[in-house]
Each structure stands twice: as C-alpha cells, then as structure tokens.
Length: 339
Image 1 (cartoon, rainbow, N blue to C red):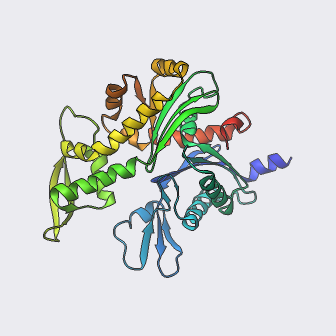
Image 2: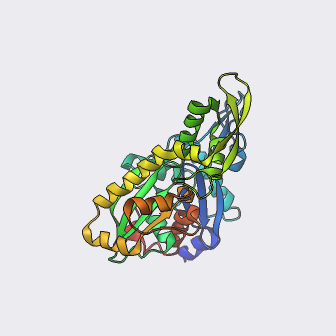
Image 3: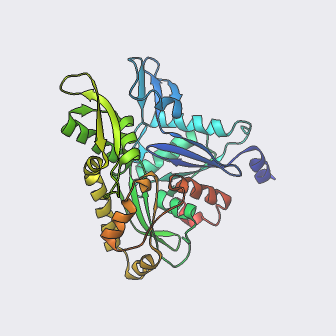
C-alpha cells in the first residue's frame, strides 16, 4: 500500500549530472529536461538569478552584479551549494504536481570518481529533495541506455565523451572489468580552440564562440571538403573587435592534442582488457556515446588507430540518461550495477 501511494504521488527521476549539460528522465514520461549545467548568481546576495538555458545566455555577458558559474568541473562537483540549488531547481521543475512524496533518484557519476566525491553527489541530491539516491557509473548507464547486454558473459566496450571527462570501459556480467577516466573531453576541445586562436591569430574568443566553432567545423581527421567558419572576437594587438575566417584544417590542428589523448586512453584500456573480452570487442566493436562522439571523423580515426569496428550510438547525447530511465524501470534487476 505504501509503495502504491509512493508511486502515485512521486515520480522517480534519473539524472545525468554532466559538466556541460544536465538531463533529467522522469519514469513514465521520458527525458523532460536537457539544459546547460550553468547557474547565474547575484554577487550581492549569492542567490541564483537564473539556472540552465537562461543562465547560459548570460555567459560572457555578465555585469559586475552577476556571476555566471558552472558548478561541475571535470565531471564532479566543484561548488556544492550551487550544485544543490541547481538540482533542487530541476527536481521541482519535473515534480510540479507530485510534491507529497519525495522521489527516488538515480544519478550518474564518472567511473573514476572518489568515495568523497560520491558522497558529495549523494548528499547534494538528498538535500535537494531526494527520498533515496542511487549512483551508477556513466559508462554503465550509457551501455544500458544503448541496449547492450551488460548482464551477460560477453564483453562490450563503451567510450562516453562528455563535457568534463571521457569514460572508457569494458563491461561484462553487470560489472566494469577495466576502465579509464580522463579529464580530456568537450571542455578541453573548446579550450584548445581558444588557445590556438590566441596564439595564431591574436584573437581572444569566449567559451561559447569556441564551442560554436567546434560544432560547426571541428574534426578529428581530414574532411573530403574542408569548410570555413566566421569567427568574431577581440584583437589582442589593437584591443578592438575583429572578424576572421578559420577553416576546418586549422581547427583540426587546435584539437589534435585532446583528440590524441582520448585515442591514447582507448589504447591503454584495450591493453588491460582480458583476451576473451578483447575477442568479443573485435566481433562487436566499440560504441561511442556522449556529445564528443559527434566530432566529425573521430570514429574513423579510432578505426585507423585500433583496427576495431567503431559505432556511434543513436542520439549519443542522451544514452546515459536513457540508461538511468531503464534502471528506474526495474531497480531490483539492476541492483548489481548501482552503488
């Protein structure tokens, strides 16, 4: 009876608490929130003025009374209080008419997270309104979201390239057999573009502009037809705004170091994979998820470097949160993969 009442008055929630974006899955409804993990604060009171998409609009345009912050860095909480406010905001947003019973929440964490960081995530969620909190490693959630047979005695390899971390894992029998988590992902790709433009063109651009360049013409390997992008920023020599044209070959040079680091991490993970599971990966291939999987030519580059089949998952941005949704559907069945 108590269980029935809880189900009636509460929606269980799955959260992909990402460095770049936070996605929320509500049981029975699907993905209901997909917003930037950004909060705008009033410097005088310290209280949030805007959260999510509205806060991102202020990024790089704030006045002295406004501070725009990203409370998560490298996949973990950098500011506990602001993260709690952000979580509370998103939970309230999806619990509009179901406030009598607090929800159960499944939250994704990087595979390299420490016990202290895990406790911080759990406590933030509890203070933000969770009844029960379950944690799941991001590559495991991504594998479940894709539909891989994680509980079977067969190896599956997943590369999840997010905003703050790249998670590489080999999964079998409901566990992560070998994994590597590196702080080299979307943010570092953006930073590579910022530093390249500063060094080569004496042009200072913001984080948002760098992301637009990355999404517009970024690539990990040569393109059949190189493309161009109009870039606006501040000339470091004259200190006045300037517009330049950059092409995809230049941006590829800017991204070479972080892309190389991701490829090296994949190789290292493969080196530590047991032979039987390596044979499974040879047959089944590597699955790529996360926003970084959309970088042009990255799948082809991995094929060249590893000689293994590489597949980009359908809708890679939502694989992780879809995995939390499947877990919510049967928490008992997935108990082994939860922390």
